[in-house]
Image (tube, rainbow, N blue to C red; front, side, top):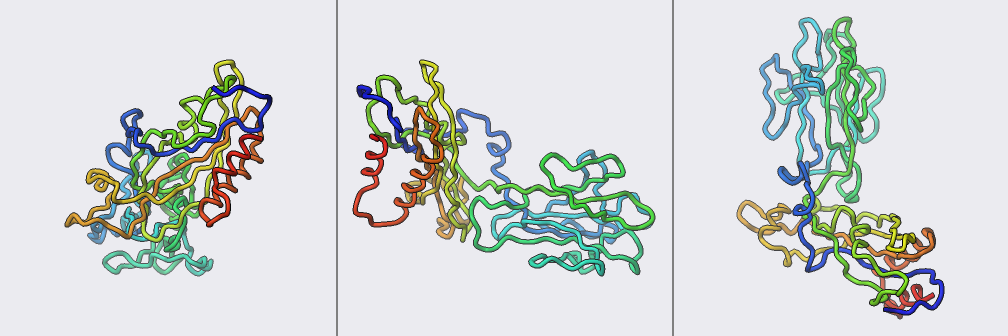
Length: 354
């Protein structure tokens, strides 16, 4: 125990992350879908098919057959003598994902820069989704793809659906509605596209976060360092993640939390989470398979970066969050640059002992 010698600006400095004693997180919580089927890959491709003309769903694509309420997701729903048009999507990690989906009224508006138009079906037929005659307004689906080099935590299209508002359907929760009706003819339902954007889940293995380093190494008499601090620093666990090629390191993420200690006193935590490269040679064969780092002939893929998250944290009886954020960012910048005349531990000691 360390004897208290008056008020301190900071009580503890902590580094949390993956340790040798870390256990797989899926043994402690239910990961629902990601546990059984793995994380969903983002959507990378869209096609339009004409079922009336005998077109089938392309290989590796999924056709949106129904709306959220179970109605046929025919883009010409309710039309008379119009072909059955459906939209299909493909999930993958072999190319940059889609980041936007739109609808283009040909002749009435210009194509937004960076967008592409789906002008033909897989068999070469016109991909016009309007239910009116071919001599009137043509409507096409558009999309925009992410840049080849992008941050790991950038948003992408992860789900897509079709809704029919004239039947009382509304966009599902967190979905964005493309506010352009796909049916402009006299007959037919009001059909709209909806899509969801989120950070695509990468192939990852989650572990219970552990304590890598702490300063001071002994507890203060008035406040013992709680064993749950690493869980507050990394609530989603310490992860080993495999990212697509050319993925940039994301910027550090700042967060705060409040702990209530045994004497009902509040302790304020300020933390920065970041990623560091993880040595592939330390992965077991099972982990390599989980991260999809094996080729079909059992060779290790070296083009995909493997990283692990880590967190540095300051604990204090005072909610000096902004000052803590600046100091933690200063430490992070020191760790990724250098060399420096003084070791990083020296700065930590001076700050904590203030």
